[in-house]
Image (cartoon, rainbow, N blue to C red):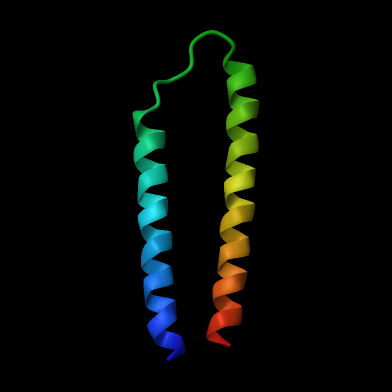
Length: 64
């Protein structure tokens, strides 16, 4: 029964990640202040990594 819930959850996560990647690929490169853009990009990457780590932990708890 748990597996029945896990598979759709994983599929939704994968679909969300695919949408995020598609949007990220469609965003044009910033012009001008590349140092500021690099800092903003780095901060966003850290937030996404933290969110993915949280999702991984939650999935691990569900599977346990």
